Image (cartoon, rainbow, N blue to C red; front, top):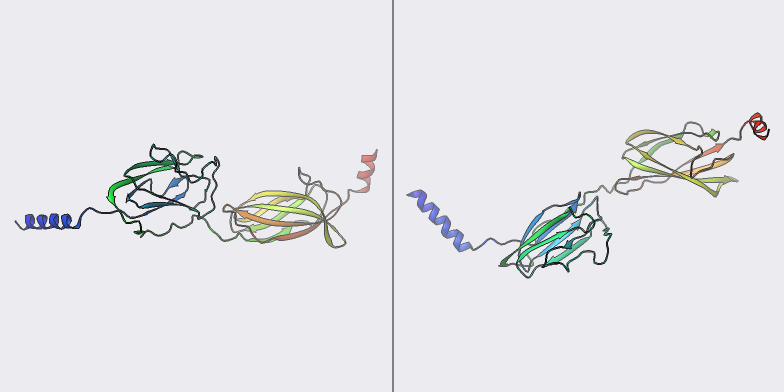
Length: 248
């Protein structure tokens, strides 16, 4: 009997409280998916999409009959958003609204709008956090195995605290100062110590006898860029007997 009374009281309280109401929704787009694939809101409430990365080349494009005009990137077949950018839609008609990314259709989801009037100011959810690190990589212990070497090159030694692409911009040096552009090199480097081939002949650098300076930067997976570091070096002329042999 007590159990029946408790159940009845619970039913009465639920009836007095009325139907549960949804709140405005926030959806994070990152790692090639929506954070909430199926979003529920009430009439006149809104959904805000946040590009949180690390991938940002996604759109929110309507593909159902009731939302074909809704598009975060109208007229742009190659969407690419800045980290933290947003797109918001309000929904004034009940129904199911389907969306996908025009570039990556597998990045998709839907918004289900009830026929219950909602409060467009009811926005309790926190703003999604970015999925990226904003700390620049650190490029340390930079040196050349030999600062003076032949056109065959030497080894560039460095240490990294984050996997990165290393870019080196190489300049001729005249009278102790940078003078003319000589070429560039690029490597993929891992966390820890790296030993990279440096200064030899390549598609973008033609070593010739003389003095040089290389300016190096590391760019990590989130496009954070290290401080510029530099190394100076000298490429030696070939031995005389080698030059004489070549002339012969």
